[in-house]
Image (tube, rainbow, N blue to C red; front, top):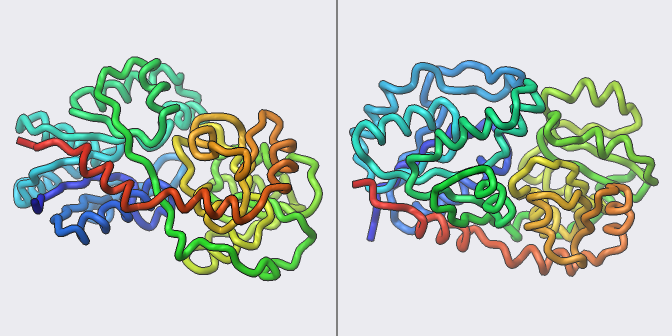
Length: 335
């Protein structure tokens, strides 16, 4: 059965992150299956810079145009991916017209806001409970996040929407691409406080530390850690080549709900070192592909001993096809 599916998200290009990657791959797979997708994203509206993160643009005064687009498309399924201005406007539209919808929980929003603005985490979760309360289902990536939301008082049906990797793009390559003292310990992602990059860069470990990415904390970290190699933002083939040239992939975040980039690293044959927190504990489920330790240095040194082929084989279990099938089966009739 071909369906008209409306997908509303505040996270979209030019952002490059796990949320955007998941949405893009899921929607592309749905279209290949014959469904009609209406993506409602910030680039369709006037925008303003996100406070403390100006490179992220948020939709401004979006309700009227968003409502018109939904009326014209008349979706049979509605998914609201994010809790920003577009998500709030879509939620309001659905409630006004008595339409059922699903939502998803992609980021530890309350913890992020606490790190950036010192707003109490309890306030953030009060907002999140309000936002998601009318949803028929809330999609989460992992069991750890499901457990956390249960503890935080979410009463919705919490269902799984996992993640995938493109193994034809992320694969082992020649490491001589990077000619720096080894081992090479690499972080890839948004250079922002919630990623806890300083926790990685402050470690006394052998070899070279490399940071791939950009963000509001870039200049601060460059000044504080001059021995680190900051590559800047990369995408496409240059990104894949950098990841595959590392010896260990370091994921120092304590606030991610999944961490797709860990799968990209594993598919490239690179073991992962991380803290034993939500995200890593759900992805790195074998000590043959990564090491989780409250002492990140110990995790890095342990991960350096792991086998590249084991990492690659592990990542191949994750596919965007399975991810999309989960998402589609979670959708509910709008009316």
